[in-house]
Image 1 (tube, protein in one colour):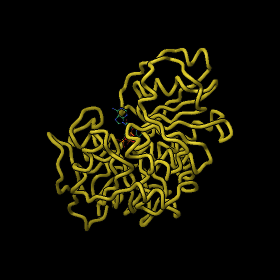
Image 2: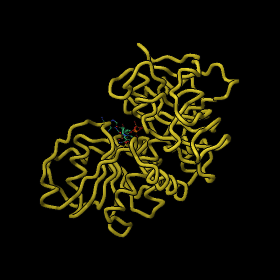
Image 3: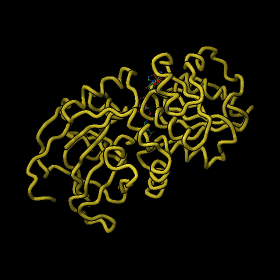
Length: 328
Ligand code: NDP
C-alpha cells in the first residue's frame, strides 16, 4: 500500500450511496493495489448508485464494477508497480470494493494489461459493456458463426453493450442489424458504427408469434423480455443467440418452438466470473478490432462527482454509448 495515500474519494453504499473521503485501511486485503484513473457507468453501476437492489451484496461497499489504473503495489507474480491494468466485474462493486473510487485492492489473477493500442481512457470506455460485447462475439464464433453464415442482430443497440457490439461485429466483417427503440434518434450513429441496417425494436415485439421470417444467423441480446423472444423468432435454422442483459425484462415470454423446430441455440454470457484466459482473449479481440475514433464517438467523460447523475439516463433507458468516469 502506498503510505502517502491517507484518504481517497469514492462512491460508497451505506444507507444511501454517497461520495465520501475514504480510509485506505477499509479496502479488502487482496494482492494488488491499484491507483484508479478511470471507471465507467454500466447498467449495474446505475442500479447500484441509485440504491436499486440486486447488485450490491455487502454493506458498506464501494460501488463500481470496472476500473482502469496503475498498479501501486502487488504481491502477485504477474504485476509490478507502474503497470497499467483494467478489470471488469470479478465481484467488483458487488461483493468486493469497486472502482468508483481513487484506490482499489483487487485480485491480480483477474487483471488484464491495458492494450497499448487503446490506452487507459479507451480501455475504460470499453469497460464491462464492451468486454461483454466481445465475450458475446467469442461465444457466437465458438458455436460456428462466421461472417459468411449470415447477418447478426444486436438488440439494445443504442446502449453500452449494444453500441460496442455493433462496432466490433462490423469490424469483424459481420453484416450487422442494429435494433433500437430510438431509430429516428440513433440511426445515423448506428450506421456510423458499422450497422448495415437499423431496425425499430417494435418490429421484434409486434407479432408476438414464436416463429417468424428467418432473418438473421446470430443475435447479441442485451435486453431480454419480449425483445429476446422476438429476436429468437427471427433466427435462421441452426442460428445462435447470446443473452447477457435484462434492460427490457428478466422474463423470457417465448416458447420452445425456435429451439425444437429450427434447432437454434441460446448461450448465456456472464462477464463477472469469466476466467483469466478468456478475459485475455476478449481484450485481444477488442484491441485488434475496435476503431479508436469510433469508440471515442460514443464516449462521454464525466468527473467522479457526476457519476450518480450520469447514471440516471441508463435507468430511464435513455443512455447512449459509454460513460467514462474520470476518477483522478
Ligand atoms: P445501457 O443502459 O447502456 O443499454 C441498454 C439498452 O437497452 C438501452 O440503451 C436501450 O437501447 C435498451 N433498453 C432499455 N430499456 C429498454 C426496455 N424497457 N425495453 C427494450 N429495450 C430497452 O446498459 P448496458 O448496455 O450497460 O447493459 C445492457 C444490459 O446488459 C443490462 O441489463 C446489463 O445489466 C446487462 N449486462 C450484463 C452483463 C453480463 O455479464 N451478463 C455485462 C454487461 C451488461 P435502445 O434504446 O437502443 O433500444
